[in-house]
Length: 340
Ligand code: CP
Ligand code: NVA
Image (cartoon, rainbow, N blue to C red; front, side, top):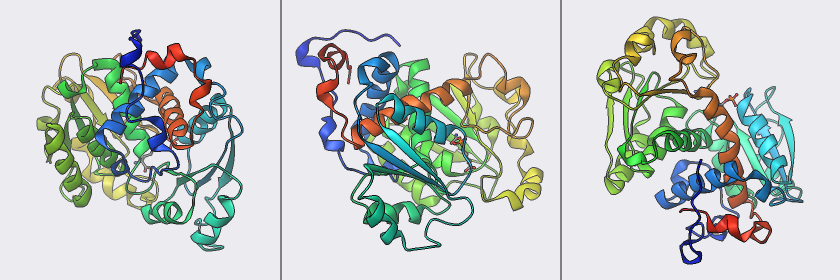
């Protein structure tokens, strides 16, 4: 990414980084459109100049409780926190739900005495909301059944890297109306970027999330369309996105969904209906030759590993802002180059 030097009066992250301190990221709705844009800009700066942020969270500790499996989210939070000089502790919570042994409130009031932030991957969104309510330190949603905010922010960072002006981009999501598309809807709407979603009947996005995305889109001036026809969704789109037909926790529905979802497979035929320079995105893990064919995910159009890399840069920006990164450690010339 090219960073243009700007004059002193054009400098700075807006809103001011300290307005993020101690806040939670439970839902993308916790962020204003300006804050979403600021996270993407800071992530760009951190990706371009990682060394300038190396000690920014020195002495800070992060604990991560995961009720579900993870490759990318776990490792990018660990690598990102280490890259900022902080440390992480991982608690594998796959054997029992977080609140099975003691109440969420008691866990929160223990953990907040030891660490500076809590990252949660859960089944229920209510678990993350509860932890955020009880804990005095920032709580970050690392995926629930309802939302995956860090993923949505990363995907729009990746689109911005590729296309620049997000207001001119149309993303077509084809598949299940799940946590990932919920975060894409909220992030895309916040950034004024057009989103089309095609799902089978009965698998549409959550009505509340859709209503909130539409309300945000009205203010930012973009379109949000939900339909059942994958061809209509993809027609002329700049980016095509898909995700698992059965998410974690829905494995018992795999056979049923395998009968319903094949018309929504992203294959070369469907990709050919998008814009000629369209890119393909997937949050991963991919179920190859189910929701996407090898020919598409391994093609030149695929940016799935850029997305995976960018998880780390975007989460570094989130951690820096919420955990109170030390601005005094960042070289002045670096802050001057932020084009927010
Ligand atoms: N995309 C994503 O969240 O991957 P993991 O489930 O491996 O963390
Ligand atoms: N929708 C998927 C995303 C995995 C990163 C799931 O929840 O399993």
